[in-house]
Image (tube, rainbow, N blue to C red):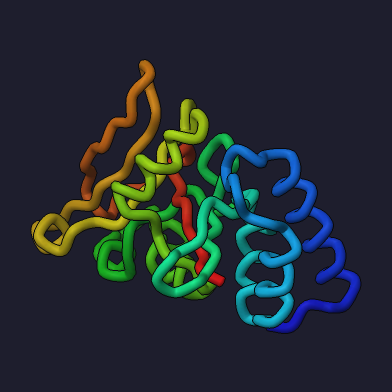
Length: 183
């Protein structure tokens, strides 16, 4: 889970450039403080690298006043390319007898060390830009919906955020997932 010194520096340069280019996403937050927290936590640095490697383009969107943690979201325009064609969870994956996807959202997010966005977090992201105008993203599904075999996803069309449902075992080339990381 450790990154080479070269990879660390490359990732930090990429994150800093994105941070500076998109200041409206994190007004009042200083990069130096964010970088210090990231550098103090190699596990989180690795997770940010996984977000970047899979096309998420992570960026800081806020500071949790209760925990003092910076919160980074996937800010790629469309659902991250390296995280598409996935069903919702392990149970859904196991239920498919044929044409199984390579993985599922819940397990992949856990492996990456990130959290799936909730509906509220997804809506907050959409206040900062237009995301998923051609794709969609699985979002954290309430237990009562999942218990009935469903899962929810969202996208941005016609100037609005839409939240839909699908069978948890479904997967599509244009549907992935967005995550967040607390550092």
